[in-house]
Length: 79
Image (cartoon, rainbow, N blue to C red; front, side, top):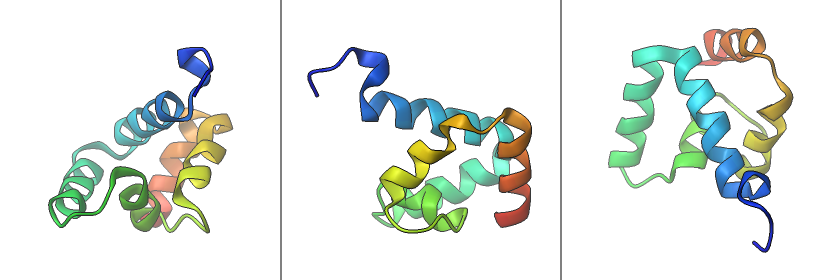
């Protein structure tokens, strides 16, 4: 993408994923790793584990605005 790094979707996904992993701890990390070992790509793995609707890539971007507390609640409810 011809955008500054911090505006590129890949970077933004990485930031959200890191925040989700911090919120979900070891349990979420292991579940994501298990799905990735089965050939599932990263964004779809998070979307599956967290029951995110529709397009997993857009669904992760939609979580950018969540506070850390909201992410912890989401992970706690859905994983």
